[in-house]
Length: 589
Image (cartoon, rainbow, N blue to C red):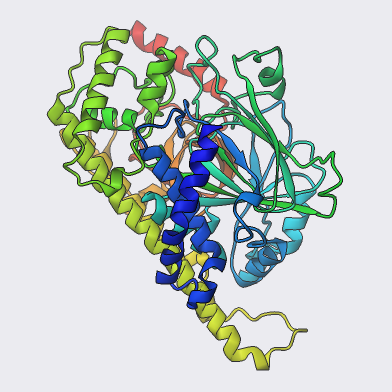
């Protein structure tokens, strides 16, 4: 495969740069040991991806719905990536920090759902921490998922920083832990991110499919979140027939082992298991792999987001944007009419901006503007829409997205650097007190150490990210009348004062658009159900979680309108039925 040859060539060409980067950041001090740097090798992996994305003569596209998945065994990379992070490293991290994790479902006939691993055993700080025993218990019934773990575990912050710097892109790292013998460790699903998987321990089987094609695309489903939440993507629909019921095709069926890598473009359905049919990997108990996320779509760095940003900034209506439900302020751009476009046009429109985008000067983007302008004209022709988007509007939107993306990149870099420094501090402290340690005693978590835990260290960075997201949203809507965040108006027209912390204290209803805590970061989500004092939320990518009120941020002040419907405890179908009934009643007046 040409893409594999290109990758290996670019990886080899990038190793020296990766080792220099590793030395600059202090991951190795001795020139003789520079080639033993795993961080330098990780850097070269992502530099290779970026270089391929920048090549004009590549016959195979790498990222997105038209991308190319590939697998390369560890023998092509040497030993730097093997033995980097194993289960004992996780046990140490659980002892040293305050981590969070979720357990994934294992039914390949239903959407992938998650539940909490940690169950507090008391009211004290130590009682609230997730334990190794809880992780091992969860492994008996599903994969344990550590989201955004590169910001939390110092040893994994180095590789995450390497990916961020090599790609010049705000990225994240997730870790997946599965016991051997799971027939389904992840049901079929798609992701919003292009991902590079690096197997750390044990083995895992991967089946990767081509995305649904023309006539098989579900317009009501997010192509980047198929098989998640309430969306169904059963395995048999991907396998049935020569090309599958959905027009899919099995592209890869491989087993990754220690040090192997696998690349899966965004939107490509895939499923995993740890059932081995060979004897050469029978000596492992746990499979661990790292998933590095290339987060272009998460941070608005794609053609569709730029187009939508320009339209909203101009005060016009985006013909592709799905209708807002209830009082939503944010819509999912990947659901609705965009999925009814011809397949080639749709994939180009959803395509990510070049990975070199944030390296470019904000004004050096005429090719990007021209491309989005042409795509917008094609959309108008396909939909019969007459919305005109000027070159100046697109240029302005691209510059704003560039500024926003650069800020998000800087925040991510600082967050990973903070984790790296914390790791070095812990190492220095351990060396200083090594002679006083009693191996029979549990490590004491002092108040000073508690304040340095990732639980507290990471949150300020994501609060900063949240501010930048709001600034972009305000820029898009700058022509609209601003809403006073301290009051709201009811049916009587009288302003009603809100609590200063209304975003975290005001009552929530089913259907409310919110931002919810996902691994220390707040991301777009929707209230799906309210059970007592807990709230079931569905995140932007289809993942679900149950949170308390303090972990959920309401985006708009609650309405005091007497016509507002109380949807507490209602299902989605019941809400829809009630809405139709209320609408009919309103039209009769």
